[in-house]
Image (cartoon, rainbow, N blue to C red; front, top):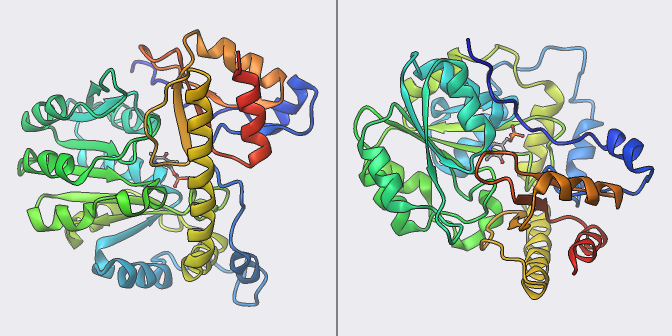
Length: 353
Ligand SMILES: *Cc1c(COP(=O)(O)O)cnc(C)c1O
């Protein structure tokens, strides 16, 4: 079997400290929430209801029930994963045979390509436009061709924009009966009222679909690993669930996700702060002549106009961790998370001419 492309998980902070010789690293590489997580999560993790010595509920019943109520879907249509990354792997294993076709975009979220390749599928990547947007006519044509799976993130990691209602409707209309449309909404919360209701649009159109969401980004639980799949029907959910391990979501993760979901106010306040900061960073970048796509996420993607691995290295020596894009064709691009104000300021100062 040919070697798979490696997922670029970014540099560990201890390694960054060792290389740079600095302790105060600006952590802008992994799209984590700099605000941390809700205090309700801490309370839940130290409550007697959390019993680390017990196996947790393999069905994640309480969390699924809360999500089903929030999203107005059936409990049996939801699968909870050890992060949504596990769901990407499970979907690929459950639905793809060797040689099956998968459509995604370039630049891509690594796992949307790696997991299909790992099961022998063929991945077609539709490149972004020169304006750093989705190429809707090209995506439409690729989807009309009838791939087994479509993996699209919207808002788009690593580029930033979200599909608007009209664009999403066009892609849904292009989806045939043999295609499963996976819409990865890891950054949904950062889109705010600009986001179309992908779930409702897919359901109205009656296409086979899975919506992916996660607690890793806006809710600030990246280290605990909880994400989920909302499937178009119970049978799709059953097939995906069969491809995961039984006790995939640990007890701490289940209890923390429930508490986080119960404190939406904390998440909304954090998202509002980060959106304002994103606006400030975007404008400051523009002022120094660096163009970014309009971002609906907690990061910006920019053309550094030079080899990004070199820039990543230089920034690291100044105590800044960002992600240099290594995908062929996009090697001048850097993705930087919106962090604390001091982290963003250090990044902006380092880029200033
Ligand atoms: C971060 C991210 C994920 C993975 O999230 P986990 O739930 O932490 O596994 C999935 N998809 C996209 C597009 C992401 O950016």
